[in-house]
Image (cartoon, rainbow, N blue to C red; front, side, top):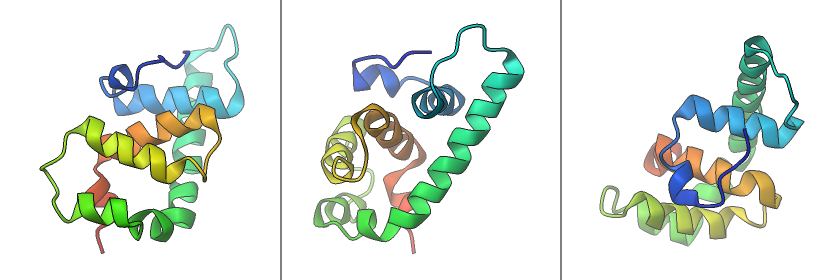
Length: 116
């Protein structure tokens, strides 16, 4: 699965589809991938994402732009939250997974990530 160029298209993908895409970005997109390999990629991506978020949660959630969004949860659109996350995460991630990780966080809920 290759990443769409439009983040709005990514926002329409399911959580499982996003994890598979992230797995492809982290491990490479192999041809002839079996369903078992796709499941393994999704599990790898989920584990990688949880570790990555655990290590950076404080930095993400204490950023003034994120605090502004989470203190007014529900008033921004997913695209507005995504724009802020792309700015906040860009120094922390390389380009390929940046958009995918940001979309996953937005779909899960930025307020949920930063809840005490």
